[in-house]
Image (cartoon, rainbow, N blue to C red; front, side, top):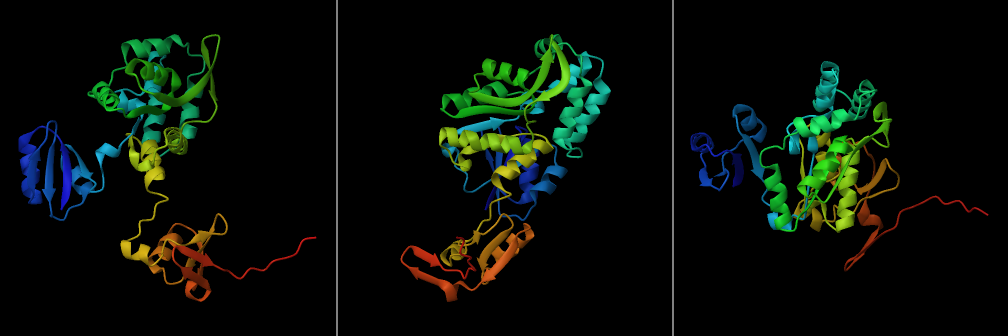
Length: 315
C-alpha cells in the first residue's frame, strides 16, 4: 500500500486521481492523501496533473525531524534576487538567461554565478535595498512554515546560491536560526564583479547540512531539505541518495555490508555479494572480489578478515 500526498484542496481533482488510482481518499486540513495498491510512477502522475504530488515514505516519521533547511530564491521567496538587481540596473535579459540555464542544469552553477556577478560590476548596493523593500515577497505559507517548526522546537536554516545580503535579512526577520549564502565584493558601495569565498553550489549546500548535523548532533534522516532548482536536486541527492546503498534484511544477515575500500577507487568485497558488487561497479569503483569464506574467521559479533599483503620492510 502506497500513500500519495496531493497538495490541493480541490475535491474534484482529488476524487479524479483517487478513481484513476483505484484508491481510498483521505482528507487532511490542507491537502488530500490517496492510499492505493495500484501500480503507478510518480513522475508520470506529476506530468499528467496540474497539482503537486508527493509520495509519503513508509519509514518517514515526522516526529523525528529536528532541522528544516530551505533554499531562498524562488523557494522561500518568490523572486530570483540577482535577476531583480539586474532589472533595477538595466541588465535584466543577460542575467536572467544565465540564471535560467543554471536552474535547468544546463550550465555549471559556480560558473553561472560568477558570470552574473561580473555583469553586475559597478552596481550600487542601493539596488539591494530597493529589491528587498519593493520586490521581495515571501512565498505563500513560508512565514507560517518557519513559525510552525519553531513552535515544535525544530531548527531552521536558509542555504542559498544567492546573495548573503538577502539571506541575512530574511534570517533575522523570519527568526530562522542560521543561514549560508554567497558573498560578493563591495568597494565604495559598488560591486566590483568579484565573488568572495566559495560559491554555494550543490556540494557546498550538502557540506553545510553536514555541518549543521554535526553542530546539532543529528542524523541525516532528521533533516528536511527544500529546494526548486537543479542546484537543490543535486544537493538533496548528494545528501541522501548518491552514497547510500540499501540492502535487504537477508543481505544484512549474510554480512553483505562487510566490504571495505583500500583506496578512493578500489573496494574489496566478497565474490558472492552479486547485487552489491554490481551496484559498486555501476558507481565506478574497481572491485577486488575475494572469497571471504576462505580467509575470514567469525565468532560472535567479531569478524576478522585477513588479507594476503605484500609488505616491504623499510629501514
